[in-house]
Amino acid sequence: MKKTIILILTIIMMLSTTVSANNLSAVTANSYFLAELSEDNVLTQQGCSVSIAPNEFSKLMTALICMEKFYPGDWLTFKQEPLVFHNEYGNIAGYKTGIKVKVRHHLRNMLLLYSDASATELAIAYSGSVKAFTEEMNKKAKELGMNDTVFASPCGYDQTGISKTTVNDLYILARAVSKDKDIMDVLAMDQFELMFENEEMEMYSSRNHLISKYTYSDYTYSAANGMMVSKNNGTESIIATATKNGSTLIAIIVNSPDDFSIYKDTINLFEHGFKNYYPRKICTAGDIIEQVNVPNGKTPVLHLVTDRDVMTLIPLGYTKEKITTQSQIPEEISAPVTKGQKIGTVEYLYDGKKVATVSLVAENDVKGSPFAYLYNQFFSKVNTLLIIAILLFIIFVIYYKNKSIKKKKAKRARFEELKKM
Image (cartoon, rainbow, N blue to C red):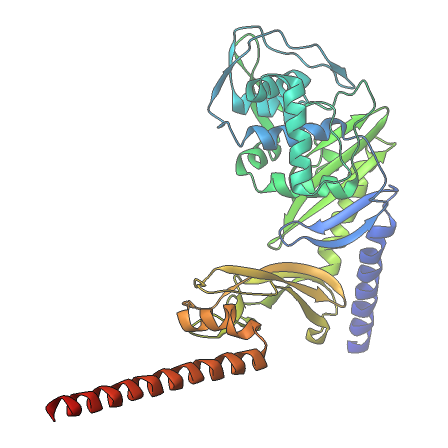
């Protein structure tokens, strides 16, 4: 009986392992990406450098920039009739000229109902014109490191065909957005109230079917908690986040030809991540990583330590020996140094693949030494023979001066003796 039970359990475990492995093979999209959001830990990716149009995802950049200036409760007044845009969902209503609308309603309208009108109005309120705001978008993209991205408008509308991005750049954008709580709160809504042009509140459901319990519930994923969908010329793309067991994953899929296969693909990506990776603690705040010299410091040796604890997803079958580190620190470190001051970074790698990046900070204060400063600024940079020559010259000058003084004293003494005679 025991052997039978053991056999059954073994078969179940083998089947569960097979299902887990098949989550990734079940993904039908040609371009997909899966990473741990908090630690910049890429779990799997395919076709992520192919150039695509940002379309609706342009609105994420619009939100990111606008929330640097506005608060959700701020009122904005429409100064002009917004352009009328159409998309696959039909015309998204704008607002009447002169009406006051809170920023939070613009965000909901723009990010959840994909309103081009709200995106345009936010841009005008921020920069004064669509053109000026678009320049801000491209400037911000460069600052973030989105080097393969060009935005054509705040809403994604592009008559010229110049807009472009990649999955890798969308990941950078999504990580930046994930740090803004106000935006993430909006992107996580499955149902929400919205004030339209009649100034009355109306209830709507999210068009992200992973989080909406009210439309197409067959594709609801209980761990999903945010981001958005983009449609363009019969294809659909998605940026989605999901949290389980304390870990948050981000999945990106672009240009799926099927309205609903994109949701199946996303769920399969998430399941692959949650089933095949497990959170492990790889460092503790205060771990000593490097010992560096501070030549002009009263204490010439400084320890660089990690600034935080790190839990990150590691593949099943974890072995501690596969964890390695690579530090990036300045070639020269000068005093004064303050305890906790960021000096560099350390990358943690598992089996040669980066899984986390941590800041390195000073373990203690290091005050500057004036003598060490002078030595390092002058003597350490001068040829030793020249130093010896200078010292000998100084000694000779002192000796000669003392000898001259002694001669003068002796001469004066003889002169005084002659005067007495």
